[in-house]
Structures are given as C-alpha cells and as structure tokens.
Length: 404
Image (cartoon, rainbow, N blue to C red):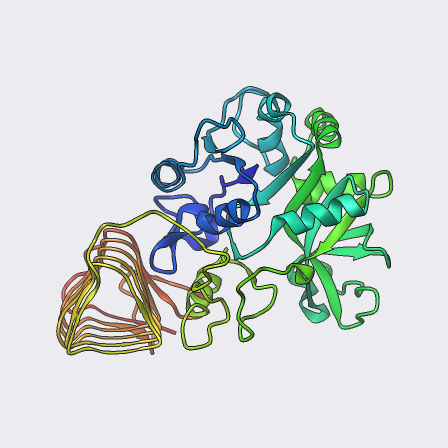
C-alpha cells in the first residue's frame, strides 16, 4: 500500500498543480518512482497506490510508466482514488486511507502488508526488512534511521530495547533517548511499516471507530506498544547491491520542503555523488522518453546532468540538473539550478539557485538569484533564498529578482 495522497504544502508552488509524489525530480523522474522502483527491485509486485490530492498528474504518470500487469493476478501497480466506501468522506490520515481500502487487502489475502510513503528519495531492499520482521516474530516492524541525537527534535523518535523491540515513541522530542550502545544517536521513524495482515485489519477497524487523526505514526504505532510485538528495523542494516563506496550509506531524504528538495537534487551531481543514479543492480526507473540526445554547442558544463532533447548554445552551466527539452540560448549562465522539462531560458540570462518548474519561460537578460531582496511578487522565494518559478510562468522581460 503506497501512500501517495500528500498535499506537500511546504513544496508550494511545485505542488500547486500536482501532489507531492508527482513532483519531478532528478531531471527525468517523479518522486514516486523511488518507492515503486524499490518495491519491484525487492520482488514485491502487488502494489496499490492510494491517491487523493490533485492526483491526475500522478495517475497519468503511473499509467504511462508503470504498466507491469500480465496474466498473473499478483503482478500489478494499481492507482486507487478515494472510494468513499467507509465513512463517505476523504481520507483523514494515513491509517484512514488504508482503512477505506481494506477490501483490497481481504480480497488479496497476503501474509503481510507493507505500508510505505511515496514522497522519499532512497534505495531499499524491502525484502530484507520483511526477513527481519519474520526472524523477530514481529507483528509490526517500523523502518528506522539513526540520526544524531541533537537533531531528534526534527523527527518522530523510536525508543527500543537491546533486541530492537519498540518500548516508546516520542514525536519530535526536545531531547531523545539514545539508541542502545550508541549514546550519540537516536532512532527516527521513516514512516514505512510492515504489518501482519490480521493485526492490521483488527487495528484499523478499532481505530476507525474512535475520533482522532487516524495516522499510523501518531495513533496506530503508539497504541500497539506494550500489547503487540512491534520492532524497529535499522535502515543502516539494509544492503543494496551496486552502491559505490563514496555514496552515503542509508541515504534517505524526506524532500518535503523546497530546500530539502533542492539539496537532494544537488546530491545527485559530481564525480562522487552522495546518491548515484548510475546503479544497474538496483535501478530507479521512470517513464520512457523518445526524444533525441541533448545537443550542446560551445557550452561549458561542470557537475551537471542534462536531459534528452535539450538544446544549449554558448552557455555556462555549473552544478545544475537540467530536464528534457530545455532550450538555453547564447550567453546564459546557470549555477546550482534545477530546471524542469520544457523550460526556455533566453540569451544572457543569469540564474543562481533557481528552481524552474516545467514549461516556464525566462526571457533574455534576466538576473534571478541570491543577492539582495527585490521581490516583484512573481517568483516564490524560500527561507534559504531559493527562487522558484511556477509551472507555465512567463517571466516578464529583463526581470531582476534576488533572494536574501
């Protein structure tokens, strides 16, 4: 069960026309491609994608990119809009979304159910988490990532005993309890779960009868502590094939803010990226694209990725992710930018730490980047000074827009 209904309000304006899992990432992907790739690479071929908020873009992407259906009934990726089967309303939380679709689980009759989010950038062999779940005799297993204890106030923190069994859960504590044997680290919840099916069904039925937020992290997991066998799976134990020594082990990012989204795109770049997309043993896949190779003429490019059908002439590009079908005219200079499909950048435009959403148009001689504030109300400026140009925006001529 892939939870793909998030609004992603902190990613506005990128989520003004699409849900968070549908936001383009890394030049050719959508964020949801990472969890779906992990599922298929792990041998999990029966996947329901639960959508809600502004879902059309995501529905079309899954239809075009993830058709694995064949003659075997247990091989599918199916998008499930809200069915209004339970209380007749929209999903009221992650647990409520699964509760609305309990019929899908009872009809399939699985031994275990994986409940994963669709808005994280990571590689994970989920079969190893399931193996851990079975070896422990767990009824619920929560994926967990060690974080420095001084950062614990940013996460839901899991308290475990020496056998990795959960004995406590604290949402964004001022000071968390350390992991056993690791006094400087705490275990943060990744929001991904493995449930024994019978327990999941009983628990969601009981939760639905009570008022509340109906959320796995806030309600379901804390309520099961003490009475059920709930374990934490340390993500750093996960061994994904094909990783390079220079990559960050246990790379996992919640790209829920503009700054986190931009930083994760930057993590893909360079000779030794923290997260290397060039892994044939654990590929991240997405929609096919029939355009020609990128055309680059008299252009300086360093630490960047450039998508198919892009056409760049006499430009300078540093530390940037350029999508497909992007046109960059002579004299343009880009640094630390994320430019999505179909963007047009005029001659002598200068862009620094800019995120340009799809099909936006930046005219010649524009100067958009990080210096002094001069907000003309057209572009969104993040707290750290990123300038975000919304989809389909036609920037007026010779815009000068700086961020603090």
